[in-house]
Amino acid sequence: MSGIKLPRAVSDLVTSFEKLPGVGPKSAQRLVFYLLHNPDHELQSFAENLLKLKKNTVLCEVCHNVSETNPCPVCADEGRDETMLCVVEQPLDVLAIERSGAFKGRYHVLHGVIAPLNNIGPDQLYLHDLVKRLDEVEEVVLATNPTMEGEATALYITEYLEQQGKTGNGGVTVSRIGHGLPIGADIEYADGMTLSRALEGRRKL
Ligand SMILES: [Zn+2]
Image (cartoon, rainbow, N blue to C red; front, side, top):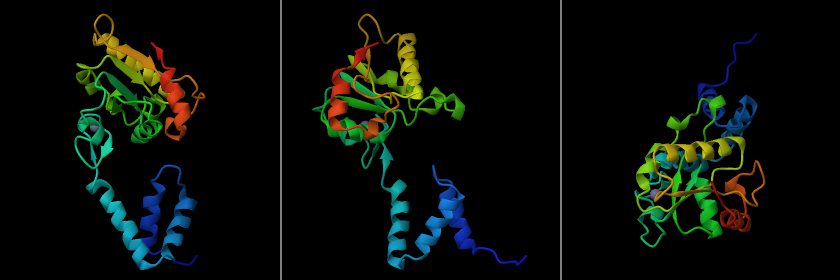
């Protein structure tokens, strides 16, 4: 056995990459050795982009979308329809729905779904301040993904809003996006036409 080890700088970066979703030890090593062959200035800009990621973004205090400003442009835009509130899993879902042009209301970003197997319950999501945003709202559109977790989360939110006395007479209508979206689909990857149809075909819960 020789005592040769990877230089610390290499193994540290491998460890960092291994923490990324979907990256195993082998891919992490491959990425690090790939980077090692990059010119200095490219590594420099890679490192700067990493540092800027958190420094130059905020979560909007109102809807929790990732933004450069707080409140985000959608929350700050007085021309948006205040009576419609669309609940999504991730910031990329907002982007996809905005691209479709089919929704003119406001958003609420959960940053995840209820997934008991991964120990993610309602308290780990940006969910409970949703009820404070309903004064002007007439319809809450649940646009979580049509996956098992997405459906369970939509159901939970429906029941939660009921328990909080926000639905029913004089309260909000809760609807579920779905029509036209294949089961198991990801909203962030859906094309604009499919999303428009899914929003138009939402059904009351
Ligand atoms: Zn916002």
